[in-house]
Image: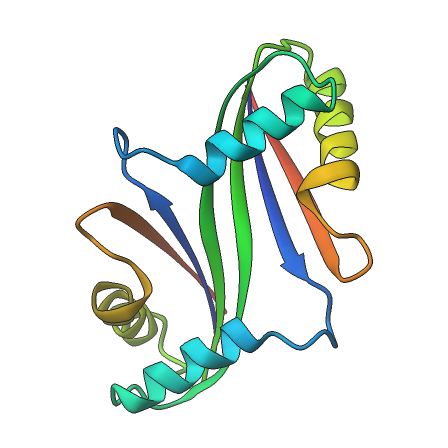
Length: 80
Length: 80
């Protein structure tokens, strides 16, 4: 069973990495880029076969390790 | 118009960051994590209103800046 996790900065949290990308795109001549936000994308391959249990396990992993819930949101997608 | 870009390492390319996460999850007592791969997730807010043109622009950005196409794949999703 696979899980896809997106970890993104919460709204209002400064994203210097995104700003750097936006600036670099501007320097390369790409116009009309209003905003860039960069997050993390984590793919997990789990031995668990029950989708509900897998989601609960990944949720615990996000809270404990994968995301800093003070400044980051996470979303989990379980794929059979 | 918004674009979501996923940049992931190609299969066969070593992912030390993913391995570090896998190892850390093991240390925290999460069992049955067979593999972890970490990629990047980039959200772009574009002034462009035509989906086809937006996709073409983001494709060019990926090739030139966002992804290293020697070792990384990218996928683009355009959201109205």
